[in-house]
Length: 461
Image (cartoon, rainbow, N blue to C red; front, side, top):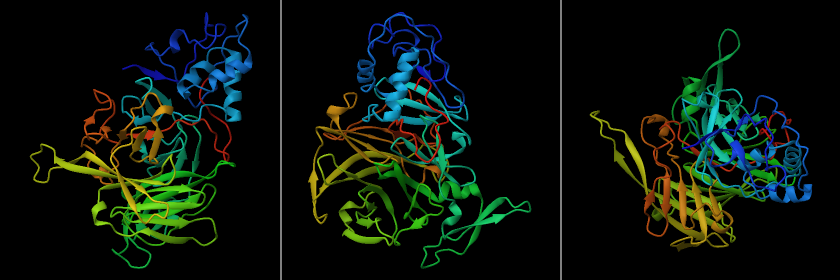
């Protein structure tokens, strides 16, 4: 397995890469085992100027607009004019928008500040150097629009784009009613008061917990959506304790806003100001977030036939909503301990289209022209024709079990499921990632966050 670090573009001029069209040669070719690299903390090395004739800029731009982001990074490292073209493409937002999802994970051997990106297109690994705090000290609770939602060791959350290196803080965990800071003698937050408080009824009395406890047991899953795609503004929706409640914040807010009380939400999707959330017993609720007061509509009540460990909801490419239910078995690891750890094992998926009124489910057996991505990412249903590296009628899944942090030594439930016969394949062998933390799907994105400055980016772009 080739490992590529996007950090050190070659200084030597290419023999043909800058003058003979879009063909790539040299150390950044996919067949090479040399690193290709991302370093978000230093200025990129300027490519050597090539004096020979070059392709017209408009043709280069058309070619660059078809590339996956790792290819675009390598193209930008070839020479000055190609770099200029890549930067222009990025700044105009004309780079390829339909990027193939990659698997992001961390590894002790790679370093505390390094994330590894496994490309499904190239079947190779890229390494990304990320800003503080160390990514291996953070809990990744979500991935959407190319952004990670992470929780650091103080239980504070950040939005992080691992491709550009940008990050921005989210509102403090202490803005939840359930959490209050406990300060030490120097005035720093030392612990937290946590009240498993369901806003209306106290479930457990208030007790003091460490930041580490809150990091792993309060935050469950977070998803990012465009609040207004034309302005690039985001809204973050968090599923959290106690018992899978929902809160949201827009980037720039100083607090989290709690949604009407309910429990066991496990996924959501957002469009045009409407948030659709699905719970573990098949309930589907719609929240209108467009006004000053949030309104809630019950689309579907409890459905005992849809009581699964994982329910997912997504806006389908053909219109309407798609409900995906994940069937799991739990196998005991061989362990002499009287309470062996349970390993989740995905055995199948059940698919339903939700009609226009949301009141009726229509079961479907397969998705011949589409591909699913499930896990801590925003649920994706992609056209197989637009992503030739992916298998149609298959689901790519990662382990998003809420009890993962309590079973760090267990194998993770990751693979590819054939929706035609529910057969499961391993994604890559041998396994590249550690059992903890669990990897997440991410769709690489070069779009810069509007709220922060452009102080770091992919080398060559």
